Amino acid sequence: MRVIGTAGHVDHGKSTLVEALTGTHPDRLKEEREREMTIDLGFAWMTLPSGEEVGIVDVPGHRDFIENMLSGVGGIDAALFVVAADEGVMPQTREHLAILDLLQIQGGIVALTKIDLIEDQDWLDLVEDDLRHLFSGTILAGSPIIRVSARTKDGLPALIDALVECLQDRPARPDLGRPRLPIDRVFSVAGFGTVVTGTLSDGRLRVGDDVEILPERLRGRIRGLQTHKRKEDVAIPGGRTAVNISGVNLDDIQRGDVVAHVSDYQPTQRIDVRFQLLSDASQSLGHNVEVKLFIGAAEIPARVRLLGKDMLNPGEEGWLQLELKQAVATIRGDRYILRRPSPGETLGGGIVVDPHPKGRHKRFAIGLIDQLESLAVGTPDEVMLQAVLALGAASVRDVVTRSSLEVEQANQAVKDLTGAGHLIWLEEKEGGISLESDLLVTSRTYYEQLANKMVNEVSSYHRTFRLRRGIPREELKSRLRLPTRLFNAVLRRLTKEGTLSEAGPLIFEPNHQIRFSPSQEKAVQELLAKFAAAPNSPPGVKEAQLEVGEELYNALIDLGLLTQVSNEVVFRTQDYEQMMSELQSLYKKQDLLTAAQVRDHFNTSRKYVLAFLEHLDQQGVTVREGDFRRLRTKR
Ligand code: GDP
Image 1 (spheres, rainbow, N blue to C red):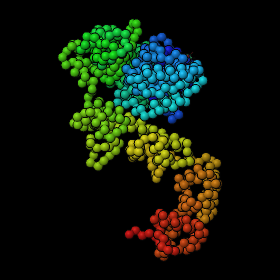
Image 2 (cartoon, helix red, strand yellow):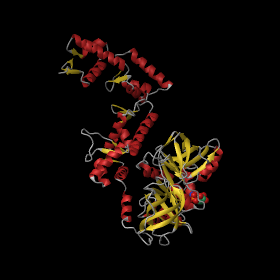
Image 3 (cartoon, rainbow, N blue to C red):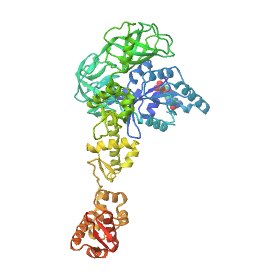
Image 4 (cartoon, protein in one colour):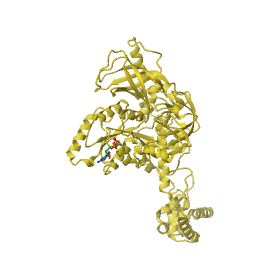
């Protein structure tokens, strides 16, 4: 499941657009929740044409907009960046873009909205030029800009297409086996108790799990989980998730806290970070400055220790140690933003390099910066996992190259990751796996994503074509738009483990059964009665198709009730088998038979017998020799 977040200047039409896309106005969610008394996420969601659900995090345009936006934007897959056509680029347009860029949100689409207010096409072209200029060098460079109106609904289908395209090949969020849910809302629901919501990452939560709320370390248990208003037993990473927790008091939890399994995370009050000061920051950043840290859904006052430099100028990068007023549950690699408290201004942001530094660094200690640089790179396992995640599925050789690790380290990392189940070998080879081989590997997360897609496609085919046994392999491949090799590897794994079955050219779910409606059942019985009345000279293919329809006819073939032997001739399978066994008996008495002899035995016409025998020739059962046929003997 995917989550996108809206961004853009206040009043530029974000909420209205979300309402046009999802049918729900974000402002109305709170009221709705109270009325319905359900555990609602408080976030809108929509179902894409593919059937995939996408959660939308929208922050209504109140005060503190930027800070509100920050609490929701951390876990999103893509940004829906909204710009009103009548106003064009405004201050928050720039600021939000800078934030998305600092958080390295992977991709987005741009809605140039309110086009119903603009008559002059040249004006729209101008605004679009402005935007392209603004986006260059940012994560939105090259993103599609779609002209829409939430009011007239113009352009919405194109916007949805762009969304599908943008989310399509994004690998799923990794499951690292240590879930954490940064809480962006907390409330209580009558009859349920405490409910928190957020975007889940790094692992799964299950009903019944013992959890703790960090940094306070409050213990509780998961009573219920919901995703998009649906109850679930398990919540997977990347989705908008509501967690009903028992044993924890509402008043003790606040936005920014994190739900995690007991002892998975150690809260910290001091972190080492890589930092970039925005190039349009109003002033340089010095040592010992008070800032606000935004990380996950938390907002924490902090003091900056500027390491290795006296001053950081706008546009420059450097290293900071942040002393936090309150503890936070964060890990290496988390992205964060710093703002100046007043007057409010986004200063910049970056990445957490060490969430548990040994102590207060001496600002100019020898070797300090080198040490931080190498920490930023990570352990070989982490580097390797990043390489696998970035490539989706690739040959192990490419993964190793991408990781830039030394052979020995790479070897060990591959072993570790395979052992821990993070890395999956999609292909096997005699002689085992080797780092130089071109065998396909992928992350477990990506494999599960592909496997789910494949299984869903097959089951949706079953739902659409109830009378077909399964989806043709080639059709499945083209629907999934996967490279042949990857497709084959995933399918092989799924058939091997029994999740899918394959027979001839068809792929199906092992327990799928063709079911007839009562009227279809009646038609089938009537047709089969005609076959039973004349087993050796039954109705022809055309006649049968006309009688029950082509779909139903094909189902009878798929089910093995009918056996078609030529373009025109078809038998009931049981009659066909009876004929086969009688033919075998005839051959016991004599080695050679003419078509006429066979015809007389079955007391049927030449048409049926020729079709039957030619079919047997093709099957390699009989061989024709002039006017005669004999059984093909195994030599
Ligand atoms: P937000 O602050 O970005 O969420 O903006 P809103 O969605 O609240 O919209 C601000 C104003 O613009 C409201 O008065 C909307 O009715 C209006 N608006 C939003 N979308 C459109 C649109 O496509 N066309 C027109 N004409 N007005 C719009």
